Amino acid sequence: MTFKDLGIIEPILLALKEEGYTHPTPIQEQAIPILLNRKDLLGCAQTGTGKTAAFTVPILQHLYNSRQDHKGKRKIRSLIVTPTRELAIQIDESISIYGKHTGIKNVVIFGGVKQGGQTDALRRGTDILVATPGRLLDLISQGFISLQDIKYFVLDEADQMLDMGFIHDIKKIIAKLPFKRQSLFFSATMPPAIVELSGKILGNHERVTIKPKQATAEKIEQAVYFVSKQNKTKLLIHLIEENPNNSTLVFSRTKHGADKIVRFLTKAHIKAAAIHGNKSQGARQRALGNFKKGELNILIATDIAARGIDVEELSLVINYDLPNIPETYVHRIGRTGRAKASGIALSFCNMEEKAYLKDIQKLINLQIPVIEEHPFILDKNEEIPLVEKPTKNQRKKAKRRVEHKPKETESLNKPKRRKFYPKRNR
Ligand code: AMP
Image 1 (cartoon, rainbow, N blue to C red):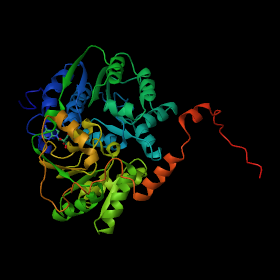
Image 2 (spheres, rainbow, N blue to C red; image 1 turned 180 degrees about the vertical axis):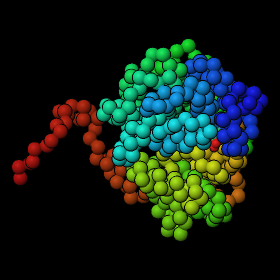
Image 3 (cartoon, helix red, strand yellow; image 1 turned 30 degrees about the horizontal axis):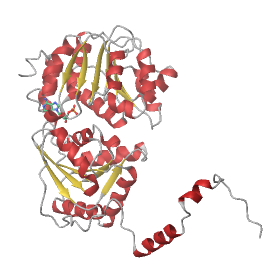
């Protein structure tokens, strides 16, 4: 199957060829015909599968085929809503690439930056608008955006939208859309709340599911290191020093943890930066930009900040902490081994995370190979037990407390404890 077989028009075929895409990915093969047929689509797939081209290519084609002479200002005919600024920017960049020979215009808007540049671009007119929910509603209420001409609506990463508390914003946006439109709804997972939301957006639709197993491309080499919590940074430094030129994305479960890792690496003279929700938009974009350009080799990220980030040539993903939601593991490792590159995903697992590892292996239906030999092998005695053993002193104190505990009958007859005891008269 080629892109030409899918009925894609010449100006887009040319752009895909220039990008080096020879064959459609499974989601493109399945979704493009449905979308060119003007049907609504429920896509159960994550980034890394070629999802962006799967929905932007047919939209570009529809817009191109119904292009106007553009004497007046262009009206927004397609709206793509996505949860994070990074994803919005990435989708916008992809549209610019796939649509470069079509003359279709696209604009991206997102919060956390001054609105001036964005409203200027909107004033000049656009065919496609890529937006995060908050800024979109804000600019609609200020009169910069009208949704009345929307013909193609995409809600991307719906599950993450809900996780981030965007449900009310989404409902407000849907209420402003024209009834007659083609709708596309993408989500990596399909819990009941998502199914319900999709029912509010989609009409009669088709469904395409690209299972995580397929998405966890065989191209990604996975391995796990058993290592104590205390030794994780040392192991990280060791692995980075072994592969100094690899661009490496390190996942931390928390923002605080991400900052801590950067501090440790900096102390070891390893240049690294963190991206997470507490960093300013400018700092995040700078770090990501440098990482993409290859000027920064190590990026530490939380799941929310990194989801959907597409970095070409990303060769190594390290799960410094294992995620407690197994699907998150699939999202994380999908950052490497993208359509073109092959990649490696290494995970650090301490005693307390073994249950997470079990869940992950069950989900991906694969036993992740264990690296048995490394300088920080988990010594069974070294690992902190879940409940720490009391010291000799603590045991003595506890014994004293037990000995002085009033008898059960006494305590039962005792009046109810008051919250505040009056000071005793001396
Ligand atoms: P996405 O899931 O849209 O983020 O795409 C993941 C990566 O795959 C991006 O780097 C795309 O440029 C790349 N890609 C998408 N479709 C193809 C294709 N048909 N052939 C090769 N690379 C692709």
